[in-house]
Length: 114
Image (cartoon, rainbow, N blue to C red):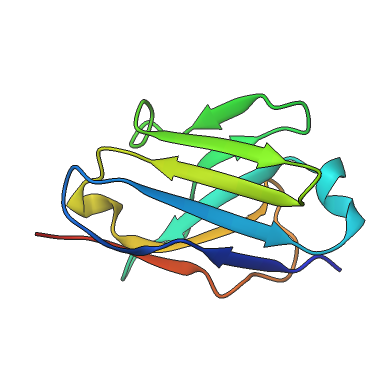
């Protein structure tokens, strides 16, 4: 069973930056493609960025060019660098497998507001 602990969220002004981190327990991490998801109030959870075991990345159109996902398999950690943040990026951010495991972490709140 893999568990996730997300961190790095906060309150930031439009145009600002944040770097999220997610530490996964268990050795299975390095065998799976990983993703960052977000859920805004009243909306469904959506996948915003993914990264394969080999490091190939993909992004939702809404964040392409602004967000960068990366991973460090030696630390069982996946990162999300978020630049040029917009108010519509406000959400709780979670990490999980690209094919999600059953358990989700508590997420980290990102609020973009002036």
